Amino acid sequence: MEFLAAEALGTPVWMWLAFAGFVLALLAFDLGVLHRDNHEIGARESLVMSGGYLAIGLGFGAWVWSQLGPQAGLEYVTGFLVEKSLALDNVFVIATIFTAFAVPRAYQHRVLFWGVLGVIVLRGIMIGLGATLVARFEWVLFVFAAFLVLMGAKMFFADAGPKDPHDSPVYRWLARHIRLTPGLHEHRFFVRQPDASGRLVWFATPLFMALVMVEIADVIFAVDSVPAIFAITTDPYIVYTSNIFAILGLRALYFALAAVIARFAYLKQALASLLVFIGGKVFVAEAMGWEKFPAPVSLAVTAALLAAGIGWSLWKTRGLAPRGSGPARVGQQG
Image (cartoon, rainbow, N blue to C red; front, side, top):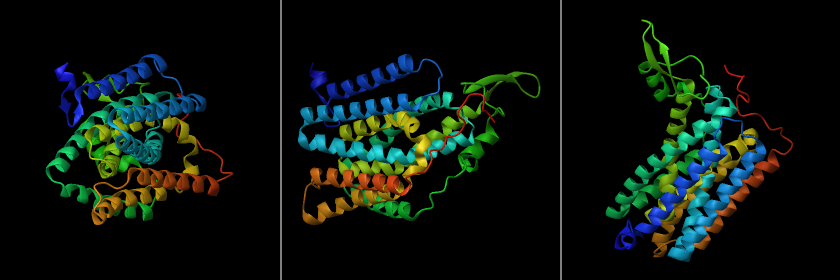
């Protein structure tokens, strides 16, 4: 009992274990019950799943509020909304990757599931490093804040056109150093095939390459999202849990929004403004002599920017027909 009550990174061990157990149970239920077979996820199923993950994430925030107090609860909800909104931008990139590698919708969930597992580990490493730096060097937080302001300004004016993942240096390096099959092999990431000499050897499939590119995309997005959450709170527990619960719903969010991505034409500008605000409030709090920027104000501004970006996008693109998100059937492989 003393071990459970002991603190790890400022939070009781039992709260870390409760979080880990809950996430593992969610993943087991998702893969073992909801998606035992490789089926195409339709709009209704994706909306139900997305709503469920959103409710779970916010429900965990209510639990954080009850255990750690109102300040922690507001910081969690703000961080959760910021990470969720940045994940929306990730949907654009994932759709481009699946289209480029001709991944049928029936197999996209498999890629995203294993992608999320990798993200959980990678985000844990990045957040652990960030927490260590912030704890030892307080000025690092101001570096994060300045970086967010610069990245937000760059994002606001950046060309939003999709980029072919085949042009990525990572893809070109892998293509030169590992064996690749020319086409998909159902849901498999690796298959055994005869090489030029007739020996059976392992080949990676385009599905594996799509998985690698999804992971790379998340690392790139984490460069923005991890500093953003540290600008909201430096509590490692709130930082990590809000990140993970936002990411867990990414798969459902993708299937819910992939067909209407074009409707969110101005979301990038809203996210850019949000990054500038999050970075700027660190400097405002320091200039005003506040220990922290008021959490209710931070949450209200975050919600207002996101609502404005989504609302303006939907208004400006009203009447625009939804489009597909790449191959829709298993038989439509390239």
